[in-house]
Length: 481
Image (cartoon, rainbow, N blue to C red):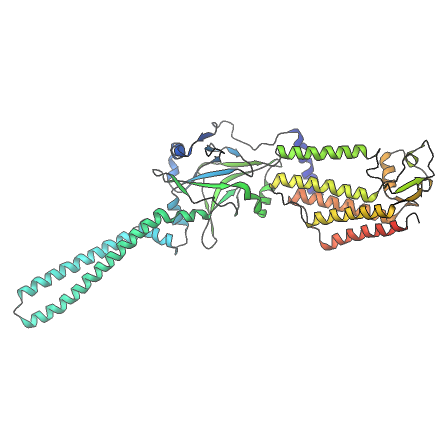
């Protein structure tokens, strides 16, 4: 109940204020630029420390026309679940060299190029080849000088063969390493882009595994090595655990969190990319669609409550109250039909489930809020109302028997007694069904507001409600006989 009250109070206050995410007060207006000038604009905004190591250096929204709206550092972007956003990262190829698995092809290629291990090996092999060539040349000269000495020539021939093998081996190693270095350079230049698909958007400290880049990274500025990554927010709510934690840590009116990136390595290890300046993302939960939908529901509920006392919308029209005193002296004689507990139950679950659906649709952006529990509850309440109407058809109850000994002048008290009464007065089976309906309704609403999902009732709990409704129908068969 504490969770229910803590959620209801701010929710009721929403009608008095507009829900907007916080933004920096003194920041310049967001710049809207075309893709051709995006790299230059970001480069001009970079602080001097931005090139020291890989960083997320720019963030913003991709507009419908394809232009890019940059968010000033330290401010918040107000977006929607359908929004396309982008981030700009510098030195992305170097970042992958640091984050990739040590034994991965990219990491090995990066070490060959950046750590100069390949160049050092190439220098040693080149030196070995030069030494082998010098030694071979020296042996050839000595062979010319001792051409008449058969014994010396035999020794020199053996040494020349060894020197020739050493030279060929050095040349082979030099050729192979040169080819490997060229391949590593090409791989570093182009092969890192598929790795950019391993990025995930991180909002408010929560990594959303479904929020991966729409496409591979694209270089927008070669001078500062700036790369563009695009994301669509439509899949945020699919990461249910991360989304729920972010919802609970955000204000009631919107989801707000710092924007960062998470890189997921080949073995699932996560590394987090730093941010030079704080960028924030805000998604209003209660937009105009929510207020229109809730306004329609509130209008229907208001009309329902307004008409319920004077119409038969909640009354069992199959039962006619006889022996009434007309003109009616009080509540118990002024109505032609008794109140229907089954219709009241069906109405309660209808308004709770449709209101919960609109609330969840607005907060999560998902249309898949209705679960089996909601369907079963609607089915039980609707089925109970239908069978109750069939059982009640063409029955008559004595109005004077149902009138309490001391009728109250309070409409609410009279309604309460009327709902729980049969032709012989108040009954336990009606009270049981009424109590279970109220208890489960409170539990259901509390689950929606606290967990941002329609709760899943156990089979036993749903069975208990079904039994309660079945007992009500069974006793109703005896009522009036």
